[in-house]
Length: 190
View 1 (tube, rainbow, N blue to C red):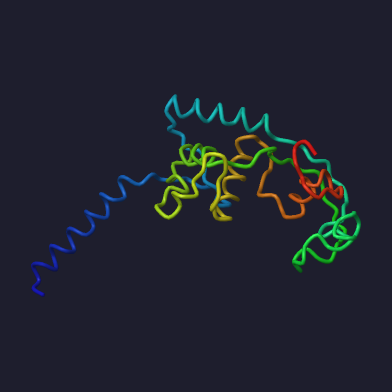
View 2: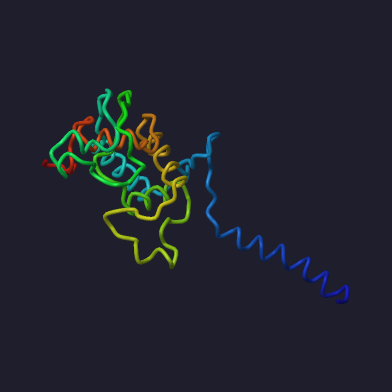
């Protein structure tokens, strides 16, 4: 290699890098690493965000804290002759859990919700990669990694002015079982 191609490479590489960075949205994060809402939202984007926040506020439910038995409660109800609900070992033994009150959205997050979050924080949309296209459904956000989901929840909490995070397994089970009742099939209508 001669010196001339080396100098050209050293000059062109940074230019390519800079031009690629110029098209990448920048995301501001707070001290805990949670992406922040951009300060330069257009009027249309701000309206989308405002409408989203109104919808999320309406969908939030306060779950009063309490104690319950977490895990496989099959022997406490009439199913399988009083046997376990499942043979899995990860939900045994049945054990007492006490939770403080918490808030939870009544509906699962959708890709549309994550699209608003991505737009507002200047991030690339999640779930748009080629390998994710088949599972990107309008009514759910399947395949979101834990950290992205946690950041979304914390960002949403900032928008609603309430502390939020992903629900723990204990919180989810407590809410799904109507504050820990022995409910086999949690539904919105019993």
